[in-house]
Length: 451
Ligand code: SAJ
Image (cartoon, protein in one colour):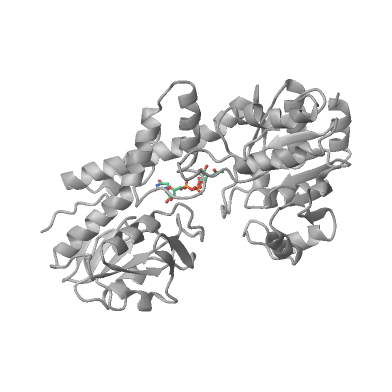
């Protein structure tokens, strides 16, 4: 039997050894945080990432190179050999949970991590899953793999789920000050996992009654965003037809000091969490013979937005007697959201593919993301914005990067002949007023009726 007392003692006297499996945007900040108090083994199967980190190169703004270097020389050991995890008291799994090609949960990373842990799992160790997944993953997937060792979860070794809530690049909320949810497979496990996080976090640790509740809380947080973004998008589609500015409507609704929370329309929902997490719950719900129509419909509405963006582009070009075919369209922003360089699930990919499949040419400008993979190959950002709009027929503003100010854009638009502008993020609040007379402006959520 592993003991609460023994592990609690190792936590309180700092002698516990912690293994972090997966050194991505979740695992690396956690390994750095844990290495403030404990000896940490940071395991990463990618030798390239290990090499980069060993050279003190941090791929994430959330982990400074000075901090990484300081910890590497001290309490943080990096390894691509599972054997180095064998004597860890705690093993925290922070691996990706993507979708497969059928848009179903891909738990292969979690299963691989569990299978390697199972080879050395021994009495007294404690495993925590942080990766986002559907309620039931810890108990239905992880524990059976661990118990193949003959050990019994909750008795011989501990198991808990504690969802990552990292928001990469967020200047205000970091891993140390974001409240942490923890749910064990029994009360003792909940308590031990909670004590571990409490020993390194500034933020509150919230104990749940079981793993499923903790898994459900995380997935609910992100589905909440996805469905509310879908609502903002549907309102935008309605108000466009009614000649109403949806962005103004949202700002005015915000004047209600309670009962309203703003979400904004856009070209679609990208990123590594929000578009995927609803499909994780939807998959599991169907196993309980429930079809989550609202959640699935929200995804369909969000998935329509890149297509709507193309529809606006076609309408704008038509008003200057052009078609996408043979036109050159400049895409401003290929990242999945403002001021990040990540292009995962970025709506721009679909927009670029639609332009190319319609016989158009696409040029890119993004100050953060340098390139994006499409089914027609890699599309790279131009070095400078002037070059990006040179000889272009239209600009599609997909991402509202901070540097895409009205002044920045109007200077570029003035260099174009009869420009067609599609604004997905209300960057040009007054359209082309005061910028150019001969251009055409259409925006998501804007009254786009032709004069
Ligand atoms: N988006 C909209 N309209 C909105 C908000 C977002 O179209 O009103 C789009 C964004 O452009 C992006 C996608 O949705 O393409 C996702 O945006 P996001 O702001 O939710 O950003 P993420 O994907 O980085 O979400 C992360 C999540 N963090 C974790 O899963 C730990 C989420 O829970 C956070 O709430 C979110 O960051 C945040 O608040 O920044």
